Length: 122
Picture (spheres, rainbow, N blue to C red):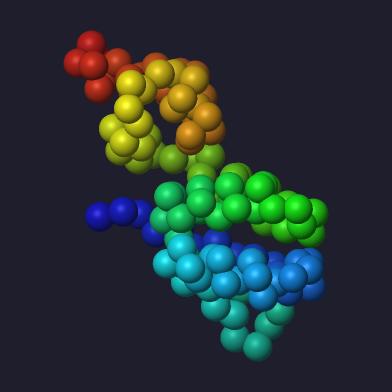
């Protein structure tokens, strides 16, 4: 079962221009985006692939007010477990250290350990 991350988005609507388009794309990815009570904060529930898709969408768009969200989402998946890195590496064709680092923002040591384990060297 895939891990679902719960990420608090503080002042989501106040910090984001064209929030309706961003919310629509987030929900289109299958993520759950909901307001926390009556506050201005929102909660995003998404797995790793969904988070990555949202980041790619934000970075490819021409909306500078969305970049704070991409930065926050990137910081959320920097602490992936070894099992999650193995799962990500297994989905990459001809996995290399640089490809794994680019896909998951892991360290070189983590990438080497995962690839060695996949190749049966560890």
